[in-house]
Length: 148
Image 1: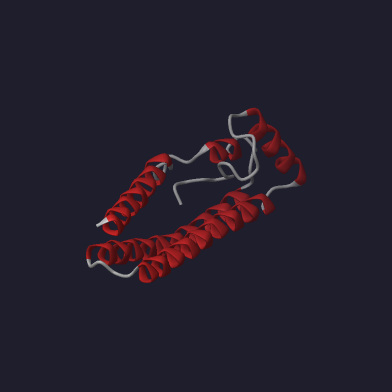
Image 2: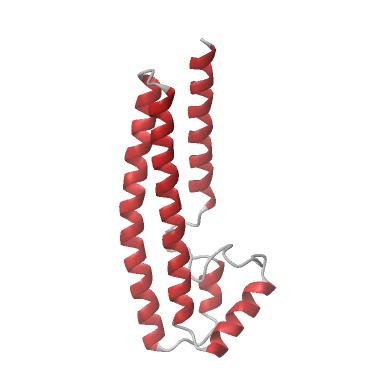
């Protein structure tokens, strides 16, 4: 009975963390602090198009990863409901962790790609403006966070 209670508590905590993460992110189209700053950099048409292409490519990849994450979360939930072994649940959890790492890596690569489109002067101004706001750390927020 204690083992079952522990598993149920674990499942509930996973669901709460996942829900909190979804609610904390800006919704599509709202942008984020980095996107607002990019709009202040007098980007060329070519830079805007390149950044749009980067965001669209990343969005399609992220969408596929989110779908995999949803499917994996359903498997974890089913495993708990079916009294799966701890080994099986741990294995699913490790898969989920790897998927979230892949999502984080994709977001980071998007940030780097966006920054590569800027001139040295624009990059300097971007980082200065970013530092003046509430998101001072590199990697907190993104140059174009748009809910991906």
